[in-house]
Length: 548
Image (cartoon, rainbow, N blue to C red):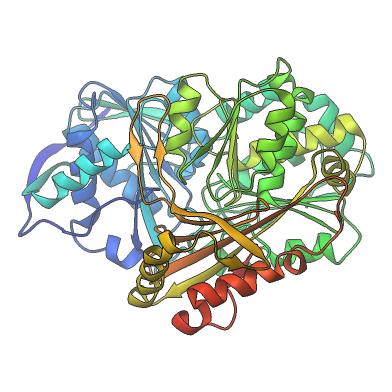
């Protein structure tokens, strides 16, 4: 039965001037999004810009953080006011980013609106975010996000239906004005997709044996998905999924699956000996961390291992068209791709750059060093997919994570790799440091650096092989004569200050020392880049906030 509604035009005193989306949408503090008309302004601009809205289908959901459900109701009322034909959302408003990408694609939606600030903290004192995904299920391209930003700068008001908040307690269909509202179980479709890609019987046999698994959902969106998959369909013991109930503030934690913020899980695997496999996913479910007993899998290595073992999963049994990695990610996947005889693409950071390659059929797998891996099954990175892929490999090969890694390095060599994050650096100091190094680039080739010689130094640029678009200013690279390198980038996904990211990489062939501690193996590069960039001096920080 249609709800009684009335269309209302709301005037703005002035447009907001701070709604330029970053690489992963618009992220601000929760309190900023609570500012009257702030959310509505960005949604109005988005609904005006995204093609096909009138008469189209829209997918909306989020990671469960503070403000998620009220925001879904606001978006639904505005979507109805803009002539959307059908809005698909989920019980409790819970929808992971990978599941949203799949729904957009499978239901023929014109777009998706994903409410998440990814791995940033939640709660009233945390962060909130809105990301627009296109009809291919991937992040909207820059042409769209730039147009949205432009629209916000001249916005005079917005359209919205006056109506009661949506009831998201149970699946069902209702209407809001002329728009159908379909509330579904957000887990079902995603689980069905995973069952097409992986051999659940084989993985279940592994998990029902004496192979002990710990999965940390970090009180974020993947809890219901992981519980259904691991403890339900795959028969893992109750308690396998930890922190599995999504909470508005993520239980006071930081839903970022790395050794710093998922330290309890890391301690279980790296210090204790009771578990064989551990994994965690972030706030919106698109990132993953993989651990074995006394073994941390670097995300760059994870992509390389999945590439090397792809045909062991039914969904990839016919082989790979190619693989892609972001520029800061180590070249471990490149070495595998060369042996497999498939292309490997190096792109800027941002999943949208993989989208063109995926849509064109140029690649099958892709990944970033920031704990993101994915494939052509959707157009986003996918945390639980990566976890299932690792379990598939372990089930087929019948060995431990550490044995998989040792075998991989003995075949392809090892890329010692680490990322040092300096978080919440004063913006002026961070940009001053970055600009200074940028100005030094042309004079660096030929200089000594960490006992080596600088072969080249540049600010990475990329020409998209599919559409010819050019992206510049993607990161400062110091490339050494032995293949080692250091990369500097400023992150655009935080809301407080700036984050300086320092990437360090050194390759050792199969005949070299493959058992070093990465921080020790990279120590000369760490010292050299600190001296060159004056990191400690200019940030005022003696050590990184996070070491990966």
